[in-house]
Length: 157
Image (cartoon, rainbow, N blue to C red; front, side, top):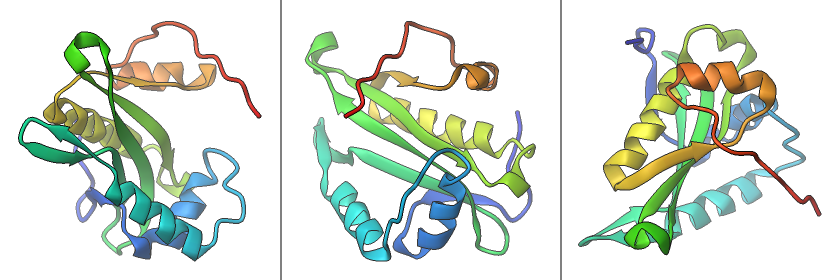
């Protein structure tokens, strides 16, 4: 089982991570001109949304980062927890927006972050964890323990 390099850690995303997270996400997709205020408002919203699971409230949005020994965010990803009606009003985790800084790729940071987020979803009580990815990334996600299942569709507005 891979481990984080010495001095690296995984933690919840914080407001101070703004610049590093925006840069890291550019490896994945178009980020746009996100301002610090927008970023902080989004984090505040995410923190405010919870689900009741038994006697506890758990966050719906679980954005996490991998930080290197110097404190720089070098990978980011989120697991969203969705309450369903099916499966006795069960929970499903959705892994989203996994990105690793170009100069940090090859260190298994993405795999470790996905394992962390998947474990977090299962600890929350999710009966499954799903994600969507480009065809070119299927092999990577299979190495993370995921399998091809169904077809992704979208309708962009």
